[in-house]
Each structure stands twice: as structure tokens, then as C-alpha cells.
Image (cartoon, rainbow, N blue to C red; front, side):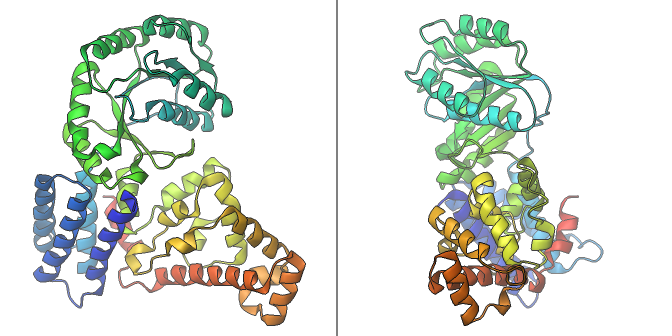
Length: 440
């Protein structure tokens, strides 16, 4: 199970105990804290950090007075939220302006792929962006970056047979002056060797970068601290990009270990697609893990692909869901990524309702089938699916070239989503009100 899913599920279970408790006292707080400890330790977070976090949560939860208008449950939830945010530190400050970025890291960390992802990030935001291959050590680095860049219309510079990385960078900067953002992919090694350090220092002098990003694989867990400190001592890093966060149980350990070094996390890789790179925001990250949702991040995703008019997250989380909304969500999958990523940004988890993996796995075949079915529905049926009876199901199936069972499957999917959304209004913890207090 992926780190975000496993850790998030464990943390949400702890929060549900808080929501279900008759009264909030020391015994309840201790039980919730024990569950949080277990979840963090299973995610490879350092034992000392977990113990310190536990102590702060207990002290604040039991001794601090709740803010005006806040219940005891909301107060404890707010404390847990704030302390988890503090555990993973502050994000790096990244501005959308002309800049030069140097990418560093050990071989195998995902540095070349991340270089293309980062270029795509700036490209989508209207900046003329180019990538430079200065990795003359790893066979295939040149072709890999070239292919990734050209596939997405990102200008590329490299000299396949040149062994002098500094010379490549000098030539690249001269030839790519017109680009606003220039991202340089440097060579890595299996360890931070003297030869690599010297090369990075020489490239650094030539580039004089605005940012030096260290790329770390989340699977290294607590060893992230050692690598971050070593690279920072060698070349001075301004931010860290954590890759493959979606594919390891040690992601929590990597993030918490990095925070100890004082080096801010700039971005996190959340999947294999070139668009699966997100600005790291501790507030949003912890909100998703706790099941509070990340409406701000979701709106940003929709804005990136100009879909904020098609899908209105604010209306959806208030329970106003129609088949038209489902249709728009399914269309969005091709542009925004898996539906599960969207759902993780909506506040379901803390309300005791999880959508199963089976419901999330909408294949391309099902996507096409669902769209055919909805294309055969009337406007009234799309707005009010409750009116769809057996005779309507037969008519819709005939019109879409599907079976009545397929139509019923879509309606079941719709009812599951609607049930989850209605839970938002019936949760014992008033999360929408509590969230207003969190970002203080």
C-alpha cells in the first residue's frame, strides 16, 4: 500500500476515535496519540521525533484553552494538525519568474525524470522553459531527457559525445539565452564522491543558479537526513524534491528526516506521469492525510487545465452532486490524473467514510462506457438520477449500446459518491468550521 494511503488511513482512524468519543478527556487523548505514534513509526518516522511530537500534542491538547467557539474535539484536532505540520517543516519559496535551477542528487533518485517534470511545471504556468543535459556519466541520460522534453514541447540542449560537463553547460547557457527558466540536469553517482563534488562546484560557478534542488527518493526513509546534509555541505542546496512518494511506506521518514536538516521541501513526486509533480505545502499535505481535504490544491489543479468552470469543488463538497458532475470528473481523468487523487483532496476520511479502491479503479474502458451511457440520458435524468427507473434503464442501455447492468453499475457508482458527500454535512466534527482555525 502506498505511503500516503497507509499513513493517511491510520491517521484518519485515530481521528475517528476522537470524533466518536462521548467526551474528550485525558484517556481519549492518550489513546489517539498512541494511534498516531503507531502510524508514524510504521511510516519510518524517527522514534525521537515521534516521542517529542506525542509529548507536545498531549500537553497542548490538555492544557491549552480552546479558541472561542471551538469544541474540545475541534481543539484537539487543531493541535494534532498543527503539530504534524510542524513535524515536516516549512516549504521552499518558489517564484514564477526567470531563473536558473541546478538539479543534483545520487544516481537512481529519479533526477532526470524530475528535471522534465519540473520543466513541465513552469511551462504550464506560462514561462518559456528549457532543459539542459549535463549528465555525461550515466549512459542513456541524454536520450531519456531528450525524449521526455521533446514529447512535451520542452526545448532541450545536450552534447551527446562531450565528456566535459562544464563545457556543455557553458555552451547551453550561450545558446539558450531566450528562455526564462533553464533547468540543468547534472550527473549523479552511487555515493557523494570527491569527483562528483568537484564537478558540481565547477558547474555551480558557471551557472550561478537561483536554486539548487536536491532530488531524493522517498524510499531511502530516514537516510534522507544524511544525504541532505552531505549535499548541502558540498554545494549548498536551496530546496529538496522528494520523488516516488506515492510508492513507498518510508515517505514519512524521508520528509521528517529532511525537516531536521532545515532544508525545505520544494516539490514532491506523486506518480509516473510528467504532470505528477506538486509544490509541497505542509498544510495541504497534512490536511489530505487527516481526511480534512485540500480544496485549495484541488482548485489549483482545475485551474491548471482550465476546468474550474466545469467542476465546482465548493458545490460538490456541500453535497450537490449530479451525474453531470460525475461526467465532468470522468472527463477530467484524462487531463488531471486518476480520480483517486481528486478524491484524496476532498474531506471524506475524517467523517468515517472511505471510498474503496474498487470504486476508484475506473478503467479507460469503463470511462468510455460511462460517457456513452450518460450521452444517452436526458437533461432531466442527468440532473436528477433518482427518476431513472427500470424502463428508463432499458432505454438508456439500448441508446448507448450497453447493457442494463452497465447502467446500474454507473448509478451505483453515483450513489456511493453521493453518500460520501452527504457525510460531509453529518459528521460529528464540524471540519469546515474547524479548518478556519487551523491556519493561524
